[in-house]
Amino acid sequence: MNISLQTEDKLNGIITAVVEPEDYQEGVKKQIKEFKKTANIPGFRKGMVPEGLIRKKYGVGILAEEVNKVMQTKLYDYIKENKVNMLGEPLPTEENNNVELIDGNSFTFTFEIAIAPEFKVELSKKDKLEFYNVTVDDKIVDNQVEMYRQRGGNYEKVDSYEDNDMIKGSIEELDDKGNVIEDGVKAEGVVMLPKYFKNEDQKKLFANAKTNEVIKFNPSVAYDNSEAELASFMKIDKEEVANHKGEFQITVNEITRYVPGPLNQALFDQVFPGGDVKTADEFKGKIKAQIEEQFAKDADYKFLTDLKKYLIDKIGDVKFPDEKLKKIMRANAKSDEEVEEHYDKNVEMLKWHLIKEQLVEQTGVKVDDQDVIEMAKEVTRMQFAQYGMINIPDQYLDDSVKEMLKKRETVDNLIDRCIEMKLAAAVKELVSLKNKKITSEEFNKLPFN
Image (cartoon, rainbow, N blue to C red; front, side):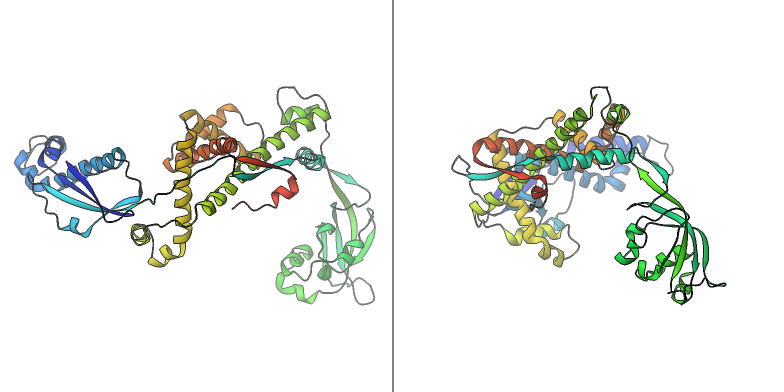
């Protein structure tokens, strides 16, 4: 097969591929033989259909499939071997629609391509970038400890109300003089959390409330006239809520408090199986180390996002083959408007991709299968950590990773994350870091785009 590239300019090109008979005929013969084994044509036993009849009925389709397969393989081999720095995919020209497929002929196909602009990425100790060293204070550790204790806690009945307690009782509607309305709204087993009242004055009425105490309050004011909440509270239909805007009284039958679990060996072993943690200080130390490790990864990611902006600004304006790129994008877009709307952002992503390619080559960063597996495990751990699951059984972790690696798009994303992680470490050695200590609270307020 003869393939050639003609560049219109530095950014646009036409690839011409000439498919010769020797490129496809052997493959066509093989496909016809395979088709003959399974062809089901009336009047002929399976496997006994004459080859001439198969060629007559299905020959053009088989030829088209084989020509396309050969052409695609050779086309991408040419692009790879000749290091054509192409953006997107080759775009077939309209002339390809006029190619008549006749067995024994040569076929010429042409493709438009967008060529990546040439620019040089250079980094040295003269380049100064900030790197954030996040300090983890006792407060964030204590919050995490409290979260673990909350999961192991339980509800207990108490005699006196404190903020966040739950009150259960019976309510009765009152008239303007504070007397119970005989045929007014009454309900048993009403549950409420005064902490979540919308009105502060109504909240204060329940401060230090005791069991068996009767407290007067206004539900409509407390719940800011929310029909749904009031209907649920009064156990009536929403349409009736408007008729009951006055005061009520509640007889407190029960006060329930959620008490966090104890900071004991059972909790230590639950969070860190193995029995290595024996004291509260060791428990907090382990948690602090975990948080610091996560912030270190976040700091690397922040460094990479800052590096992206820094290098894009440093390189300055780069000319892309805009019209050709838009034409390629339209092939996969819903509309021209969609292409225009997202074009600038897509070009910035392309620019960063080209920058990363150069940095990867300069630093020698490589990613292997084990890196991808470990990254998949890390992503899985982070997903489960959102639900408080720290220690995932190895078998479950391995099964989750296997499922992730079945999807090509997921694997590509994992590879990209591996590259970026290694790239952050490598680039830190090339540039001068302006280390900056920062609290976790300050760090979480930083922009990450």
